[in-house]
Amino acid sequence: MNILNIAWKGIKTEFRDIKTLIFLLAFPILLMLVLGTALSNTFTTSLPVDDLHVLYKDTTQEGSFQQFIKAAEKSGMHFKKVTDQVDGKKEVKRSTFDGYVEVTENGVQLYVNDDNSIKGSILQGMVSGYVDKYNIASEVMKTAPDKLNAAFTAGEQRDFIKETSLNPNKQPGSMDYYAIVITTMIVLYGALPASSLIVSERVRRTADRLIAAPVRKSEIFIGKVLGSLVSNGLCVILVILFSKLLFKANWGDHLGLVFLVLLTEVVFAISLGIGISFLTKSSAAPQVIIMIIVQLSSFFGGAYFKIDNPEGIFKLITELSPLTWMNEAITKIIYANDFAAVIPAISINLIGSFLLLLVAIISLQRREGV
Image (cartoon, rainbow, N blue to C red):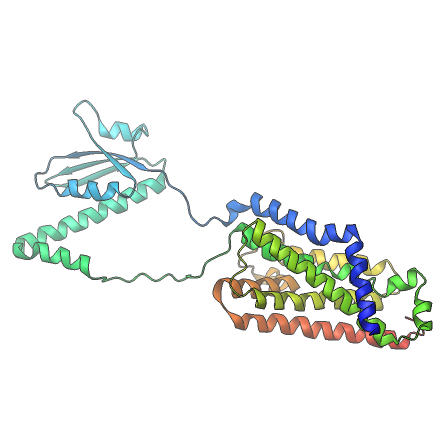
């Protein structure tokens, strides 16, 4: 019962502190909005291309190029037949049109403007496809004219080529990415208030009262840790709900598993704060040390900008960041349904927490007071 009373007192104290609420709730939500909006272009994998406007001159009689025009116009290409008063090459050179196609009995000639290589490449690819199909039709006409229609209709009925993406999994957008990394970062910041869980009793000179009361040291310690765990866990839930409802961030279909991983990070952050507070003698030193650790972990863990394919010593440094294994595990759960990814993250968090709490427990037992 003493443990629950101490835990409940700690929860009420943290939620009554306006500064704590602003830092643990308002700050991550605001940071998600700023970074997710400002850096949205860095997560764009597609490049928008305007419609293509093409001049053409067709002197053939079979009308195959007219069929190509009808099909191409469905893809955003607009063709205009050149008149005798217009020089198609000059129009392309002046960037009035994206390309000029001459279709004669001798073949197809394409002229594109080098100022826009993307549109030129698209146009070249489509015209090359038309030429290949026209050449196939010409050969079939020479050898077996009666099978021309069957050859092309068969291709429409069966899929001879199956396209498979080498990277089929959906990738997070800017808001999705920063919803994950900012949440894991703010959880790690929970080590700051955790570092003063026991120290604050000495600073307020209430430690002697706790020792005089009929409460064991173990009950005080467990109650403090449990209260901090519950309050930080509730803040994580609120941050996830805010980002999901307000920013439409994608947290996947396995939210319970994602929260389990985050909960182990909460345990690690609290253990980190308590462990460092017992390893240092000064009351101000733990705050400085934890701030340095959190800032370095956030920078190399991709909290401020996305780190893609690090190499060499930089890769080693990023892998040492607690946020790196946390972000990778959560991302794999959401976008790849890779449940095995939670095992390394949970294991590292719990093992680290156990070692840090063991240091704190040994130090607490050696003290005369709290």
